Every structure is written in structure tokens, then in C-alpha cells.
Length: 56
Image (tube, rainbow, N blue to C red; front, side, top):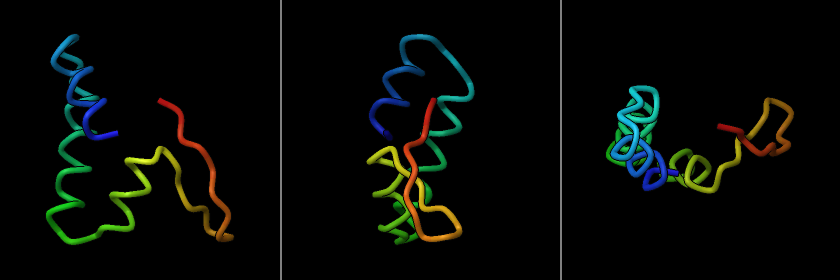
């Protein structure tokens, strides 16, 4: 997801995609590997523990 958001930003200049890129980058730097991996995989863990695909 990180690479996609950067590529999309570079091609379109879309600010939201840049903000997503920065958010994923900050998660990685903070050592939150699980959250960054989930974002990269395009899934999110819900409160009940189930996983759901994220849409862009």
C-alpha cells in the first residue's frame, strides 16, 4: 500500500494519497510492524478481531 500510494501521488499529485503514504511510513518508523503490514496488505482488523479488506 505504501508503494502504491506513492506511485499514485507521483502520477496525480493527489494530497490524500501522499498523506496515506506518510501515515504508513510513520507506522513503520514507530516499529508498529503489524499495523504497517496490515496497511500494506490492504486489510484492517476490526474490533471483533475479524479482518476486512480496505478500499481506496
